Length: 563
Image 1 (cartoon, rainbow, N blue to C red):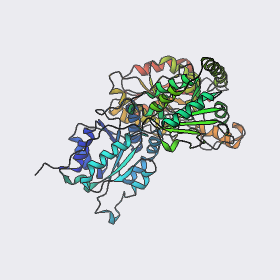
Image 2 (tube, one colour):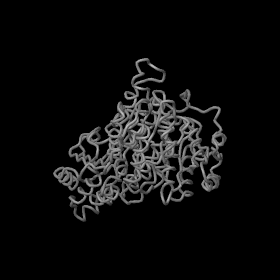
Image 3 (tube, rainbow, N blue to C red):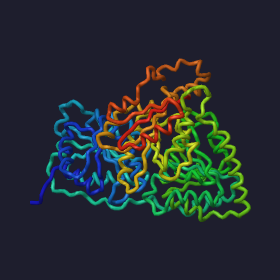
Image 4 (cartoon, rainbow, N blue to C red):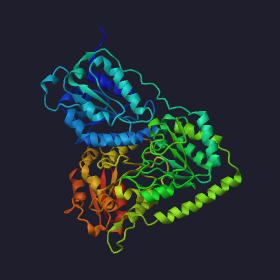
């Protein structure tokens, strides 16, 4: 008879076969067979003090690894949660991972199949909980099905559009014996080169355009590892072939175009007026977009009704979602944009004229957005958000930024010309993603031959969701510096109050939106074993930051800022 192993041992053997290095989680009784198998494997279990921290760390890890995933070194983040309450705790960042497109395999222990009729505590429909935020949600009901379902989970998570999957692992299935082996994963396919006829028609429309605009989205860099064509380079070739100005979609959370390129203009903030002015063109190309709309209902069209729309994406669901698509091409974005760039033929004089209009618009946009984040109170001794961002840019050398700065986000994006793979952010918008994601990203960077300095840039409201994320950073000696843009209030809610209800700050009570008394963030960081620093003056930001960066392990720099 062939050698047998438990389902739990088969589970860990499959993870090792697929190139997984870590399992993020918080254990419970139904996970004990898996914990035992992990102890006998080469995998590292990363303990998080809360399930949502585990999911957030795995998402930051996966998003970072996804830029350079290989068959031998998996970009997938693996999470193990504990029955219904643990899954419920992890839903916030599972939502965030789904919008971000982080390739995750999230698992959870479950009660034995033959015991559920007694309705034991901690029971719940975990498939219903997770289905809305995953590409696939299923339960393994037979140990013999485990190898196939694990293989499918890893393939589905990594196949563009990437995203989380969920598998429920019942206790009896994990304890059952089997002689099954892990199944080979194989190469992850890309979505193809696109419809040649549609590409040719799109090229004609771009040739006939007067003022073309390209709006680039996060699908461009997100799926680059699965393409033979570098998608950022392809975006540059398309821009240069068409003479279009380039902007990043609303809520863009990755570097979708080189920030130093002459045709790059700006990110589009979720402001109705600015967004409409930016996309006011006769021809608009959406390339890899998914979140290009405002936070609340807009009263005017963001794109002119009579504009010609060309929609390029590797996810059919996103094509023509919020605006009609006159021409749509689905496929691998690197291949599609390259093919379109090769088809476009524009004369030198026309191209020169378009580039001159790009330069003019760029100057206009620069003037409109230059003061963002500077604030109105010049007598306030605290730093402005603009000053904080400018000091970070001047002090840091080729960092990797993981952002959940919320009201500081667009201050950073509009004042810092990021190069490729230098920035990721919380695309889902729910607070509590950024700090654990920064720790996971730093773990991924540590596995590179040339690791960059990882800086988590979060608001104080974001930090206070899961400050105990730092426990995991300390426990596993993660080298990460967290900079807190600390205005001691939920400014985003105050800004949205003014947009929705009108008036000025003095007209509103702002119930539940201020941290009074404030939390001592440096002492909080120190309580978890990290270093903590308080910066009360803009003059000491750089010096304090350099001190924190020179340390090994996690540190927190709390910078007081005014609005």
